[in-house]
Each structure stands twice: as C-alpha cells, then as structure tokens.
Amino acid sequence: MSELPVVVVGAGPVGLAAAAELVERGQEPLVLERADRAGAAVAEWHHVRLFSQWSELVAPAAGRLLAGAGRQRPDGAAYPTGAEWAAEYLRPLADVLGDRVRFGAEVVGVARRGRDRVVDAGRDSEPLTVHVRRADGSEERIAARAVIDASGTWGTPNPLGGDGLPALGERAAADRISYRVPDLTADAVRTRYAGRHVVIAGSGHSALTALVAFADLAEREPATRVTWLLRRGAVGSTFGGGDHDQLPARGALGLRAKAAVDAGRIAVVTGFRTQAVERRDGSLTLVSDGGQTVSDVDEVVVAAGFRPDLSWLSELRLELDATLQAPVALAPLVDPNVHSCGTVYPHGVKELSHPEPDVYLAGMKSYGRAPTFLAMTGYEQVRSIAAALAGDHEAAERVELVLPETGVCGGAGVFDEPAQSQGGCCGAPTEPEVLTLSAPQSR
Image (cartoon, rainbow, N blue to C red; front, side):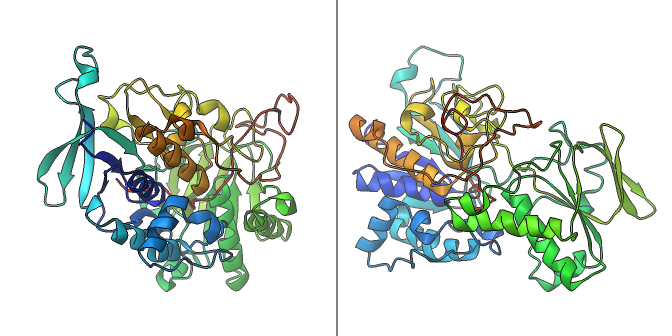
C-alpha cells in the first residue's frame, strides 16, 4: 500500500498543513475538499479578526513550502481576518500543492476495502477506501494507505436547546435564528438587527465576539437591545484571563465584552437552558427548562459551539470518548467538565490513534464537542501524524510546541462545579480557548 496516497479530508488550515507535512517527508497526499476553493469555511467568517498573529497561523512545513515556491510570508506580528487568512495563506498554499488538492470532492464514506466494521479477516492487508461524491453528482472510490480527517465541525453547529437537541419550536423559528456571528459591517445584515431585541446564546469566544459587535451596534443604534443568555449559573471566568492571557488579543476580547456588560449595553441572564421557542404577537419568547422566559425577542444568535459529523465514518473502528466524541486519549485533556485553565498538553499521533490503523481525526474535529481549539494545536497534530506515517517514530513522539495560556484558572465546568486542584494551575494540562477562529473546514 506504500504507493497509495494519504487522503486528507478538508482543505482548511489543518488539512493543508497535513498535506505540506506529508510532502516534506516524501509522502504523497491527496486533499479532498467539497467546496470549490481552499479555506471555504474560514471565508464564511471572513469579517472576524483572529486573536492569533500570522506567526501562529502559518504551519511550519507550509511556511517552508510557500517560501520554496517564492511566496512572500505575511507580517508575523499582524492579526488577520478570516478573509485575509484564506486569501493570503490558505489559497496560495493550495495553489502550491497543485494537483494534490482536489475541489468539488465530498467525502461521503470511508471503509476498509471489501470489509465492513464487523469483519476481522484480512482487515490489516486491505487499503482504506474513500467514497467520494463529485460536484456533478457522480461518484468514485479512492484507495488510500491512510486517512486524515481534518474536515472540522463548521457544518454542524450546536442547537439553542439546552439538552443538545433543538428546542421545541427552534426549527420553526429558523428564519429568526443564526448559528454564526453575523457580519454587522454589511448594510443588509446591520439593517436586519438594528433597533431590534437580539438574544446572544453562548459562553465561548464566539459569543464574546458577538457581544462586542452588538454592543457597538447598540451604541450607534440606541433602540437596539441585547440580551446575553448563559447556561451556566454565573458569568464567572467567561470573560477569560484579560491582561494575564498570553495571547493579548484574546484577553482584550474578553475585556471589551466585560466593559460592554458593565456599561449596561448588554443584559445578562444566567442559568438559562432553553427548552422552547414560541412565537407570540410577531416576536419570539424563549422558555427555559426552569420556567424562565425572555420575551419580545426579534433575533437570536446561537454561539454554542459545534459538534463533529461522524456519520460518514460509521464503518471505521474509532475509539471515541462517550462524552466528548473525541479520541479517548485526548478527551481528558480538553473536557470542559473538568477544567477551564489555559492550555492543553501538546499531543500527536499517540493520542489521536484508533483501533482502525492509519485513520486519524485532526484539527477541530479531534476535539469532538470540546469548545476550544487553536490552529497551532492542529499543526502539531499533523506534524506528528505525518512523521509516524513516514516511519519517523522518534519525531512523531517528540513535542515541538508550547501553547499560550489563557490566564484563566478555576475549573468552571458546565455547571460551574469547582475543579479539584492537584497542584499547579488546575492540577492538569488544559485547553486553549478560542472563538470560531480555527474554524472547521469543509470536507
């Protein structure tokens, strides 16, 4: 099977980084992307400025590949928007990779050739088969020696409903609900929300980004009302580490959101887990599982995170954590029920392996339902995976990354349960916190 390609699913930041790592090690990648361009998911949040600098957003092998092709590297100290990240890095990287990246190719399934997940016999000697649907509707099968799924989670946002399923009436109110941070710089979008009562649901950095944007709108359009719904019982450490955050722009985002709340431009409702969305007299009323209501709502922005789509991996033997749907060895490092400290321990092929040989979930998808991720984490993941696939196990096991801490310490968990301290910050390595910045890639 050594002559077969390593199939990478998704031409986003981590998928393209994986391809660059493989090329550098003499391996042949084939990147499959269902969209018509690289970084398509990133481009959907084009208006959001990342809190990571360019120096942290260009994967090491990708930077070397671009330099070898004569491409100029962006200013490392600058903070790009999603649009700039896609246009100035992801698309040029895909261009340099050339025919190794195929667009309009949606992966709809992966299996062992001639074996469903139940069959043991001959499994180790058969290649993986990647089932692809082309843009014209035709299908093909691609044999692969390994598969790196870097398709992300952008296409599967979490619902408003507090139990993980859409709230009663949520689907019927879809015309009033957005699951992305709206681009309020666009005239049509700003007109939709200006002078309205807008509810923002969520507690991560995507929610903080929305809070800052809508607070600015409310300042310019005083008739605009903004209500922030939190499932947790108190704001607590939601605003992040502020000046103690080792990513200054990330800390500044939380401080701006806090200032907007303190100034009274945002009303805060805590302990609200939405059970129903009701239409009343032309507006919406949100009802919690405890009977609380938020009424006269015109628009809802749900920034409650994302989840992985595992349906097309159903014939593979994956070992996923029952809670997070992340690889079992990785899950304890990123579980929000355990901690909310600054950084996750850098990890690689060891933590990302499954009973199905040579199959890896990488990038945001590897975190399952955990809410936080940094591009640097994904770059280290695929560096390690590529080293392992090239037979360099020493490099695969070596840690080549130090992640910035958030400055937050005191495990909040889902219901603000205190963390059990075992020394150090919260006693164990923890996850980085992000907004939607290393956004999941389309497959």
